[in-house]
Image 1 (cartoon, rainbow, N blue to C red):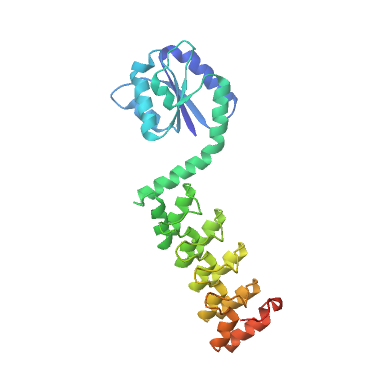
Image 2: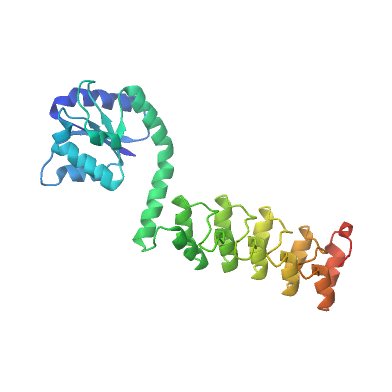
Length: 305
């Protein structure tokens, strides 16, 4: 953080007092002050551009002060914080001050800086992530994030999450990001979303599938392992009543079937057609897969089909 303190020549004593107070508190920020001269050479603009936060000792005639008008406009246009400090209670406040942070005393300044210095690292990381996306021509929107995941753009997905997008966001069709990543077969993005706190059992509105079901449908066993380790419910079903286990049987994916059975998948739970995963393995005449059921399926489930 870098704060620049601006003031008229007649308010140097007030500015010095504020500066000494801020430095005595040893906040993790650089502070400088300057007489806020306004000219056409852009000197003031260059000074403001190098600061993350601005603070102004309000001039006596703030409503018509060129440098304060410039500073206020700069703060609004750049999204920077502007702290306004009236040196005495009798000095009139311009209406534009309502759009900024009004600091009336050192205690109020401390309260603001305590909060801001604690939140600043995250805010700055989010700002940098958003800037990086825009510099690469990536629109800053939820749909753009969904597109990046579908396109397996891990770099962009990471910056969207860093910029503050929820890992539980959905695309326009109601498909959670974690399901999109599983469908795309991108383990890195699935891991990124889980680390960001994504709910592992969210169901998509189009298929009512979970990321585990989508992983099974794509034969992405490493993604399935990651999701199971994160607590995925192995027995949730899609709109068609199919669990990840039933899907894996249909795909003849023995490695996935073994993984799911070991994780507690129900072997004899029927889908909407009335057949279970074990029944499909028998109907499809897959003896090696039937043996997996005999070895790993929970014997307490029974063998009804």
